[in-house]
Length: 423
Image (tube, rainbow, N blue to C red; front, side, top):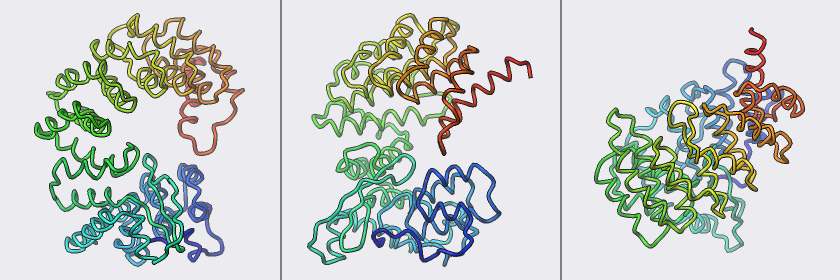
C-alpha cells in the first residue's frame, strides 16, 4: 500500500533536470512534452526509477513508451514487486514486469505475488485497506487514471492508499505464468467494475480475444441473449476484439462477426451495448455494416452517434462514401455534440471523397465553439488541399502543451503549404 499523497519527495536532490522535476510533481502532460525532446543520457531511467518508487504507474508506462530501459535500473532502485501488487495499480505492476527485467522475478516469486493479488481481489480494496489500517474512519474514494487508457478507484484511509486493480494484476500474472483461466472466471473479474475503461475489464477481454478459438467465440456469442446488459457488453467486446486482433489471411471471424452484429444492432436497447456493437460494425468495410449503422444516425444518445460517425468507411473508388453515408456524415458534422462533430469531420478529412460539399462543411466548422472541432476542420481542409486551412491554423495558434493530437492536426497545414509551394 502507498502512503497517501506520497510523491517521492524523499528522492529530491538539488539540480534535478526538468524531466525528474516533472515526474516528482506528477505532471503527466509535462513529462510527455519533455520526452518528445532530447533528454540527458540516463535521465529516462532515473525518471523511471523515481516514478515507480512514487507509485506512479501512469508516468512509468509513459517513460517506457518513450524508450526508458528498466534493465539499467538497479533492483534496489525500484519498488519491490509485492509492494506494487498490494498497492493495486496494474500499470505500476506491469512496469515492474517489463520484458527487460522480467527475468529478475523467478517463478516462485511470481506465484507468491499471484496469490497476494488473488487475496486482495477476493477481499476487496476497501475491506483490505480497513483491515490493514485498523481504522473505522470514512474512506475517501477517488477515480484516477492508472495509465493512458484506463482508470481505477483509489481508496484512502488512515494515511494509506490502495487502488482496486488487483483483478487485472491477477489476470496479468496468470498470463505470465501460463495459467489458463476459464472464460467465466475472467468475466467475473470484469463485471463488478461495470465499465470498459477499468483495467480488470480490459485485461480480461483482451486475454480472451487473444485466444481466438471457437470455444471462446461461442461462449462470448451466447452472451448476446443474456438479460444482464453488462454480460452482453462483455461478450460483444470479446467478439469485437477477436475479429480485430485476427491478422491471419483467412480473416475467419469477419463473416461470423457481421452475421451476429448486424441483427444485434437493430434489436439492442442498452446504450452501452449498442455503442459497442456499432463500433464493431464500423471495423468492417462492408455494405451490410454501413446499412446497419445508418438507422442510428439520429439516435438520442451522443455515444451512439459518435460510433456511427466513426464507423463509415470508404467502400471503393471515388466518390468512396456511398450517397447515404455522405448524407449521414454531413448531418453528423452539424450535430449538437462537439465530439460527434469532430469525429465526423475527422472521418471526412481522411476519406478519399474530396467532393466540394465536404470542403464547405469543414469550412463551416472553422468558427465552431469547440477548439478540437476547429482543429479537425483545419486538418481536413489541409488534407483536401484547401487554402482556407492556413489562416484558420494561424488563428488557432500553437498546439496545447503535450497534445500530440493537436500537433498532428496542425502539422497537416505545414505539409499542405509544402505541397502548395512545390518544396
